[in-house]
Amino acid sequence: MTPAAAARPRVHADLENLEYRSWRRFLWSADRWPLERIQQYQISEVRRVVGLGYHRTRGYRALFDEAAVAPSDIRTLEDVRRLPFVDKEQLRDRLDDFTMDVAERTYVTTGGSTGIPFGMYRGRRAFARELASKAHQYGRVGWREGDRQLVLRGLSIDAPDHVELVERFQELRCSSYHLVPESMNRYVELAHEYRPLWLRCYPSAGCILARYLRETGQRLPPLKGILCASENLYDDQKALLTEVFGARVFSHYGHYELAALAGFCEGSDRYHVLPQYGHVELVGRDGRIVDQPGQLGEIVATSFLMDATLILRYRTSDLAVFGAWSCEACGRPYQIWDRIEGRLQEFIVTGTGRYISMTAMNMHTPVFDPLRQFQFHQERAGAVDFRYVPKGPVGDAALGEIREALARKLGGDVELRLQAVPEIPMTHRGKHRFLVQKLPLSFADL
Ligand SMILES: [Zn+2]
Image (cartoon, rainbow, N blue to C red; front, side):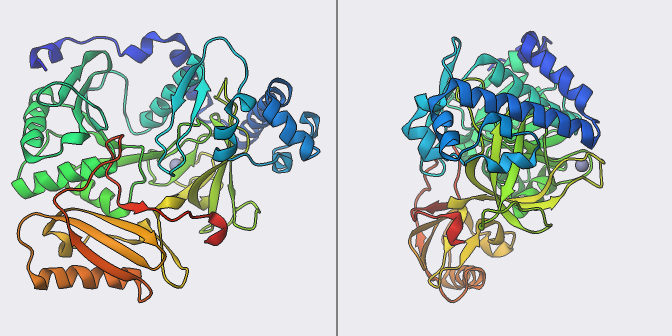
């Protein structure tokens, strides 16, 4: 990269997209809608997409007919519960049946983090609105198009130093595939020249950099904030990022299906479900709607954005803990989630059939300091491999402490095996997974 180029200001590329700009304005104008206005908007959008599903796709028509529900039956938001669910397998196996025949559409594939990779079609408008919706949420913590950003995500960058300056987006992009000391030193050096205001990262990648900076006594230039996405943000990660980078961490939940988007607000680290993006329900194991604080439910969502493959009452396999129907800090009357429990594939299954969420495996203790990285592996219920990359030689006493700390979290019904490995491979998207779960899990088993 050429640092001199950084001095030349230019318009953020997204602002050249009319659809992006108009959606950004719309969301801004709708930011303080009262509950009644939100509900009106939601029901009118639900009716619109249900009508499209019924009249313009074979798949939804067949599902609705089978459930004996017609678009005209959907008059209130409660009526949405009459619609049948659709899941990943159905969409993957019969994608054309759930897709409208529209001219401009692109085929996109998901990361397959649940072990079910699949693709779908979306139009240009959907993607522009998606970007504008995320920008809108970032705007709550002061982010603006044109702010310089250090980006640390799964980017394959050909340059020898794995860094690329993308002026169109004011982004200094660093690859998360190369988080080794030599590259990280280079990232930090360039960050001091570029002076980013924001760090945008996968939590896992941000934490590897944070631990390295702490160990080597280095710092990044002062940041306005850290924008995390694409992975669940655990409390211990948030604590580490806040401590090392000295700025607030902003997180949001989103997915490729563009049906649910939920982010923090100006004053609260809870997830605010954006009502102009989709209609979102949390559904409990018994199939009923979750609406009590502290209850866990599966995120089921109907997209208002998807304009080719339609996403209606879609079971995401992602789990969230319900918080409230409005936020005390900002006053928005949005559905609030206390936390995301992550994907079903982020649970460990014990010998007696208990499910332990990775959010409960808090690793914020000095016991793990001798390790550079670690990862859990599970292939059969009740047995877990803990694979770790040591920073240097790890003595028996230190290993004993690690084993003890893990056993305390896991309980007596998990057989634990510690295994030193030279490296821990990333996913093909450059993410560092805490748990590789090979067991097929179902929410009904939780
Ligand atoms: Zn709020």
